[in-house]
Image 1 (spheres, rainbow, N blue to C red):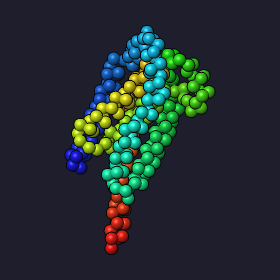
Image 2 (image 1 turned 180 degrees about the horizontal axis):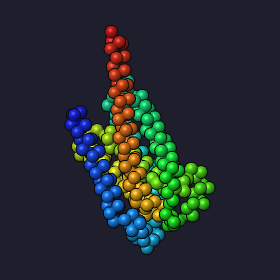
Image 3 (image 1 turned 60 degrees about the vertical axis):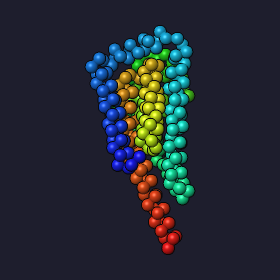
Image 4 (image 1 turned 120 degrees about the horizontal axis):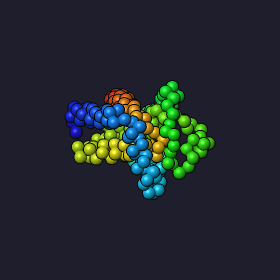
Length: 237
């Protein structure tokens, strides 16, 4: 895909996701967050236990699935750059790791500052507050924004915007990543550990951080490619 066309395609995609997220936010504000949360949780409580088990696995391990599109996209970019640019994948992985850490710090800080209590009950199999706090020292009793939603949309945005190839291939990548992010975010409401506004706000934050991460990755990539080209010219002389 031509560079200018790719930039235009990415801009439309970014705007479309923002419109969808802010549209969901408006729907929640119009119809009432408590009402939507109670309706979803009522369905969850009355559903077969297997549904809750599936949602628990999704909420706990779903983000690991993003490794598949992430590694594939970065590996393709490394091959495209040639053998001399193989260090690019390490630079890009470092940036992604740093953003994942930064995202966690931002989310935890916002939770402590805003101090919004989580929903009063959960349908997760284990006792939520006591068990989670014992097993995971960084567990927060506060809910806004959702860390799962934030990190999921961060991890969805990076490979979606870095993917290269045909339009159909890129569209497939984006559909997969965004669908997974939405399912993970929805599982937090289904399990009763987050309100809708927690997940939507987290999604908006994560999507924004993902865009920023991609911008820095592309800047670092262009700088490295320029450096390699200059070294190649010196070597040829």
